[in-house]
Each structure stands twice: as C-alpha cells, then as structure tokens.
Length: 301
Image (cartoon, rainbow, N blue to C red):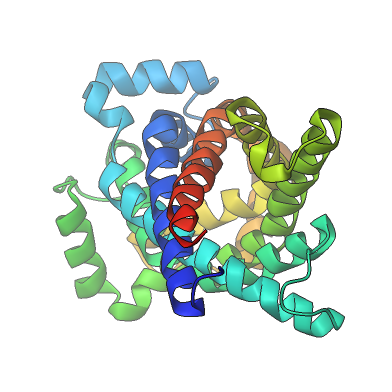
C-alpha cells in the first residue's frame, strides 16, 4: 500500500536529511580545502598543501571549520531536494501524459532532479554563505581584506544582519541556481543510469543492487555534477566570501574578472579535493537516503 502523499513527503524529507548528514561527516575537510583554494587560488600549491597548511595554522578544527552550517546546509538542501524530487517526478509524469504510478525513465528522473534543485537552492544559499565565509575566514584576515574577528557561526550571522541585512544571506543565489539546475540533471541522471546498469547486470530490481553499487552510483553522480558545474561553484564561493568586504559584482562580471585577471585555470582551483571527496561523500549521501527511505517505506508494505 502506497503511503499518503503527505506521509511520502515526510519520508523523503527525513531520508534526505539523513543522507545530507552522512555526506557532511564523510567529506568536510576536503570541502574546506575546496573553498579555500577557490577563494585564494594563489595561496596554495595544491590540496595537500592546503590541508597541511590549514592543520599547521589552526589545527584539526580548521579542517572542520564551518561544519555546523555545512550540516545545516546539507540537511536543509537534501531534505528539500529529495522531498521536491518525489513531487517533481509526479509533475514530470503529468507533463509526459503518464499515469501516477508509471515507472519513469532515467532521463525523466534527471529532469525531476533538475527542477527540484531550484527549491533546494532557496534553503541552501544562506547556510552555504555562512559556511564559505567561516572556511575562508583565516585567509581573509591574513590577506588584510578584513579585520580580525570572531570566527563562529553566530558572529558571522550577526555580521551579515548588521552590514547587509536579511537580503545579504542570499548573496550568490543566482549563481547557486545556475549551478544546481544543470548540475542536478547530471547528478540524478548519472546516479539512476548507473543503478539501472547494475540492476540489468545483476538481473534484479534497482532497489536491491546492494551497498557497494549504491555508493559507486552516488559517487559517479557527484563526479558528473562537479565536472559540469565547477566553474560556477568557484564563482559562487568567490562572491559569497568576497562580499564580506562590501558590495560584490554579480555572476557574469565576477566570472569574467577571474578569467581575465587570473586565467581560466583559476575557475578550476580546488577541483582535485572536490573529486577526491565526491565518491565517499555522495556515496554516503545516497546510501543514507536509500537505506533510511527503504526502512520507512517498509512500514507501508
């Protein structure tokens, strides 16, 4: 028996939250390295240098700087993303003229994930803004761009409210949406296609392929997402961090400034730790989501 749509939405939201938490705990140090290298590409020779320098300067806590807002960001984003993903699948069925229980193709699911990402961007942008600023706080102070200050979640939130107002939390929203829409088409498309390939090879249902294939499929989805959207993510991080110093240019102007003054390579600074991180982090995300969702759905069998 299928659960009521409201119950189904709660199940998807809860499973997304569990997956989001698993994603953060498995990949936070490498995400910190990514943001530092995106914002200050000339300060570090590579991601190993970035991680070792951060450890020497601030200790282990420096690698987990921004974990609280990262948890908030990922739990909020993935809760809304997977809840919207279920709803958007029904929208895709309606638009394709299919009945409400029809099995969607991998391309249809990729489209549903792409649309769902618009909703998740609205909750992701404010929390990711705080996370990025915390992660790059040491470099901003060391380079003299800002005065030395408290680097806690609450101090960053108060600073944004005082200097920029509520709209300050949405610095980089346009870039976030521009990143998420194509990114999540690739993310869900690659994930579902990989699961289908495993299911065909193993001659079983997609939900029964096991832990390792789910982790690999999630990692592949994450890798495809980042390869497609990385330059946009770099611009987003730059806008969110550099806006601490005052009004920051928009997406296109920031993109052109980086490309013209620092070279196209700067738009890919931090890609290595991102790709290293993507398999364990996104594998954990989908494993947490699929396993918890399956357990909750079993209550309605």
